[in-house]
Image 1 (cartoon, one colour):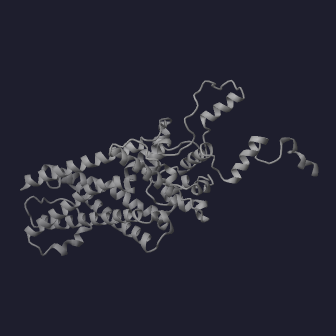
Image 2 (tube, one colour; image 1 turned 120 degrees about the vertical axis):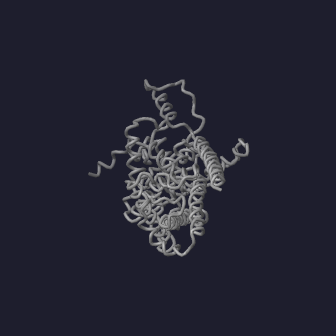
Image 3 (cartoon, helix red, strand yellow; image 1 turned 90 degrees about the vertical axis):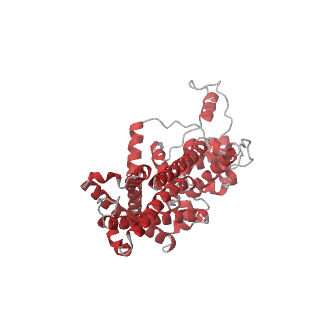
Length: 433
C-alpha cells in the first residue's frame, strides 16, 4: 500500500511541476513580446533594491496595518515551505517526518511553523474582513468588479483551508505518536495543534491514521493546485516581485528619456557635430500595443498584485477622473494574455486590436505625471512609463491631443515658446514696472 501511495505522489508531483513550468513558459513568452530594454547596469544597486523592496518589504510600511498582516502571510508562506519540503520527501521515499532526526531543532521548527500557520490564518481572515466588511475603498473601484475580487477571495480562502489542514494533520499525528502507532515516531512540538487533540482523541488508531493521511494529502495536493493556480492569478507576484524589483528603473523618478530618433533629427537640423545624418528613421513613435512596450513594462503588468495603492494615491483618481494606474497595469496584462492565447493557437497575424481598445484617451491624458503611483507601488511597478509611451503614440502618430496641448504645440512651432506672442514681445511686460 505504501509503495502505491509513493507512486501516486510522484506522478502527481511530476504532473504539477510540468504544468506549472509550461504555464510559466507562456508568461515568459508573453513578457518577451515587448521590446528589448537593457536593465543589466549597476548590479550592486539592483541587488540592494531587490533585497530591500522585495525581501525586506520596506515600501509596505507606509500603511502599517496591512504591512503587518502581509508580513504574517509573506513570512508564513516562505518558511512553512520548509515543512512542505519535508512532506515532499516523505511522499517520494515513504518516510514520515524525514527531518525528525534533528531532535530539538526539529521540535522548535515545527512549533514555529504552527505559530506561523496561525498568523497566516489571522492575516487572511483580517484581509477578508477589510475587503468585505470594512470595505476599504481601493478594493471596490470599477476595475475590481468580477474576477479580480473573486481571485483575491479564492487565494485567501485557500490559504486558510491549507493552514487548517496542516494543524489538523499535526493534531492527529501527535495522538498517534502518544499511542505508539507504527510509523509515527516521537517528533515535533505542537503549541497550537495540541488544542485540537480533544476533537480527535476519541477515534480509533485506524480512523486517526486515515484522517492524518487525508489531511496530509489534502495539504500537499492543495499546495500543488495552488502552485498551478498562480500563473492564472494576480498572485503570480509571489514569484515575479523579486526579478521585477531587481530590474527596477534606477533613474530618479520623473525622468523621461528623450526619443533618440527625434533628438538626432533636431541635432541634424541644427547641424550639431554629434548628429548622425545617416541614421534610419524610426518605424513608429511611442506605444500602440504591447509589442511597442518594453519587456519590463509587460513584466510590471504581470507583477501587479492589484492592491490599489497606486490608484488610491493618484490625484487624478481622487478627483473623480477615469485614470486608475492599477487598471493600466491590468489592461496591459489582459492584452498580453490575449495576444499570447492567439500564439497558443498558432495565430501570428495581427488581430486589428491594440491597447487603445482597453484604455481610453481620457484615462491617458488625465495623468499629471506626478509619480505618486510609482512611489506607492510595493514592488516598483511603473505605470507612468506606459502612459507616457502611449501619449507619444497619440501625439506623434495619431495627432490626437487635448486642445490645450495642440495650442501649445502650435505656439512652440510658430513662436518658439508655449505662449501666443512672438519672442520680440516677451519683454513688454517690463515696461509697466
